[in-house]
Image (tube, rainbow, N blue to C red; front, side, top):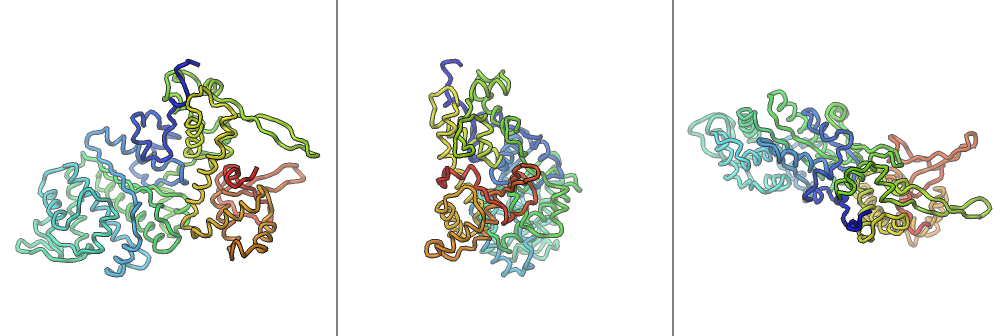
Length: 500
């Protein structure tokens, strides 16, 4: 290997998709697995599902990057880091929205965001756009603010102004040249706003708008108001997209949502929307060098340094990676040494998602920046730091499903229990003997959720086939925990839980 190369020069991207999109070589580092980018641009596909860390935000940023390079294609990504469900609740009380629906407020918010794009990008200069600008100015809809601020705004203030196909439609929605501006709720103005937005888009069919809603999980809580608001956003986006397609308008609203949150939503229309209008990011179950996650890593390596550009995947693995040696116990207490392929070792400690692989490899290059090879011993050395990251990821996913004190307590319990493999009854007995430390923890609920999020799996030994069978939610669909089977702590957690 050439002397000028070292591990510091490898670029594996960032843990955060938004930060990776800021890299100069973002597009070359992006790995379009299974043609996801192409599929997401289909006019009928607007709902993108996937587990946390599978690359949803990265795909959203790639769509925006692609749009930025095309004239007359305008894309905006909106997130909900500061979204407050309380504002929706207030709107429901003030405007008598049905208990289980927020469709009207979401339709208003989406149309306002499309209106902001129309004005910001100077899509047109016709009378309808001028009317829209005046309406925004009158109601202080600042163009640089996100959707969550629109919700806060309409929760606090009445709406006023003239808006409609006739030049002076007000609250009533009826054309009248003598009509004056009136105060009303967003519901009063919604038909006129929709009418004007659609008129502008119909008159500018050569323009394309993509509005993406991402990070809806950041404020997630497993309660009806939150779930009903997300259901309404999905259904409203679906209805608007259908109208855009029907009117041959190249505008689309997209929603990027965690799979586990979508699975909690219960509405008779959602399954149809999922079947017809969604794509799911799933990196498969292969835990060897044949995994597409390895192809992703190799793509980043090839585009990081010239010495790898013309080499095959097998050549790069052989040139850059060393095997990992480990000890294992044999029968009668004896131990033996063996070795495992580098990516077999790394993937076993992951949930088979890009974020895990990128994080593991980045920790190696940060720890050994001047080295020229990712040796097996380096992979083992950084495992403790990786395990700390992995544990935090699981805790973050559990937020909204468990209270913070429950999350802390169940992880403390597993740490104190100090067994990587055990029966549920053993852990239950241990807990009952220590209620002074752990309190009245609902252990079955916690263990069920840890299984759902793959912090733990289960296994059973089949005597007839002389084979051990494992169950992991991240590798199988629709599996339920069997409390009679042995529980296994995921390898990615074991260093952080002090399990060796």
